[in-house]
Image 1 (cartoon, each protein chain N blue to C red):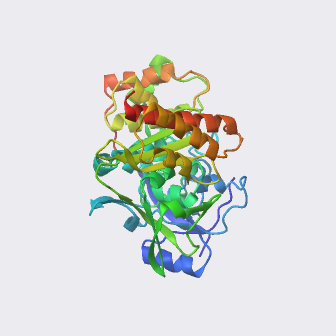
Image 2 (cartoon, one colour):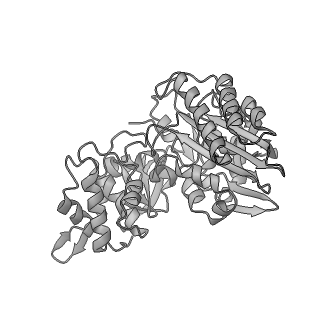
Image 3 (cartoon, chains in turn orange, red):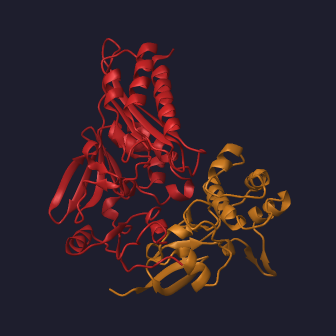
Length: 166
Length: 284
C-alpha cells in the first residue's frame, strides 16, 4: 500500500492527473497542488460551504471529499464558470447577476455561493425565494444578509442561465 | 493541514470484507463525518482508511415483500428524490431533508449515519420508530440486527470490526403512521437539540397500537421511550393521553447540558413536541 496514488478526473472540462495521498482533501488538491485558489476554505468541517464545488454536477463541500473518491469523476470550480469567448473570458449570466445586484461584499463566500447556485439553476431551479434559500442553506455569508445573493440567483433564473457543459 | 492516512478503495464488496477481516481499517462512506475527524482535533485520526464509496453493491433502494431496503451508500439526496421512498416511507425522505444542507445530503449516507452512531444522528430515531433492521456483512456472512438493539452506547454499536453496515431494511405494515420532528438552532446545518420519531397504527376503536417513540440527542445513544410508549399504547389520542405522554417522557429521559442546548430545554421541548404530535393526530 503506497501513500501516494494517481488520480484522474475532469476539472473544468480538462483532464487532470495528480499524484497525491488518497485521503488528501479535494480542497487541498485544488488549492495547493493545482493552484486553483478560487475555491476558499472557511471552516474545514462542512458547515460554511465556502469550499463548495460541483462533483458530477452535484454541489459538495470539497473539504469533506478525499481525492480518492474523485478518481474518474467530473469537477467544476468557480474558475470554470466564466464563458470562454474569442476576445477572452466573459462572466456567466449568474456571475453577471451577482455584480448587477451587489451580491458580493468581502467575497469569501462568493465562489461557494456561485457553485451552489449553478447546481440549483442547472437542475431547473426558478426564481422562487424559498427554493433559492434552501439551495444556499449550506453556504454562510457574514456580510450581505443574503438578500442580494438571493436576488442575484433569482435574476439569473429569470434571465436564463442555461446549463453549462462539463 | 489534516493528516492524510493511507487509504485503499476496493471495487468489490468481497475484497472489502477480506481487507477488514485481515486488518484494522476505518471505513469511510460519504466522508461527512470522517473528513472532520482527520483534522486530529477531535481525537486521534484513523491509522488507515478503507474507502467504501466505489462499492456500487451497496447502492439502491427497492421494495419487495412488504419491506423497503436501502443500500448503505444511499445518500440523503437519493432518499429525498426517491419515488419509492416517497410512496412507501415518506418520513424517511422528510428526515433526510432536515440533515445538513444540499452539500451534506449529496455525500452523507444512511449507512454512515448508522455506523457513526452519533446520539444526534437524525435518521436514527426513524429507524427505531419503524422497527428497521440493520444488515451487517463480512467474511463470516450476513446478519440482521434490529435497530432497537444496534446502538449499544455512546458511538458504540453491535457492528464488529470485521463487519460493514451493508443495508437497512424497513418493514412496511399496513396502516402505520409515522411522524418526525427535528429541533435545531436553524432549519439547515444544525446538529439536533432534540430529534423525535413517533409511529403507531389505529385499531377499530381508534386506539393506538404498536406505538413507538424514538428520540435522539437526549441520551448517549438514540433511544426509545418505554414510558411514553406505555402511555400511548391502547389509548385514544385525547388531551389526557397527550398530557400523560408528555409527562411520562419528561420524567423518563435524562438529557445533558452541552454546547448545543441544556438538559432542561431538551426535556421540555421533547415533551412539548410529543404533546403536539398527539394533538395533531387527535385533531383537537
